[in-house]
Image (tube, rainbow, N blue to C red; front, top):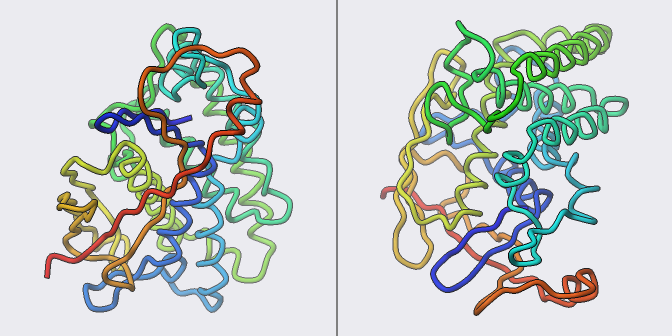
Length: 294
């Protein structure tokens, strides 16, 4: 659950709803006028459109390991609301690992390429806290260099063990993909690395909206024509929840984005029988618009 105070409103956005926006952005990514290649079209792939569909699916489902938790969330005793993602992971990073242990295998049988992308998203979230000498190109665009989700209070060897689990899952997925049509080309770094980076970007863009979309941001190292052509995106909020992006990467300009949320105003306090109250709350549709500098 993402909990953000925006003015006098408290926005509550589930992880799956946030991820759905990531998938939406992935589906519109690619702008020949500014040189942005659509997901899946990196490298020399005969089945590029099929790979694009896998990338969009991975973006939309990258947080599906949170389904079970969101169905019956842990509640903050102070306000009776679901815990914020940061509060939950600060209370015990292993709980965040468990979400990935559920989510990464979920698509592995039917969609191994999408599962592989999700596994790398999980890996790069934590790896910079645990290991040295890593490629900074895969640093999540919302975190400061060298940072990631808090592992405070955790023996780092436990985190490294989780990363080794992900490596084992990835090795199995690589073996499967090598036997599929176009599989070796899909996992070639020229094709795979840009798609991994884009999953990080779509996650970051969606999170920024979930946190209010009101802060200027710089998203570094975003692949444009290929992995060697990477640019920084500058995001500047405008009036009316418009956000100017330069260079502009989407194939529609402007691009309207709808974020599903529950919105509370006024004082918040614990209530008995949480689910009866929670599911009676209407969902709001928060509208943002991405636009070009022109």
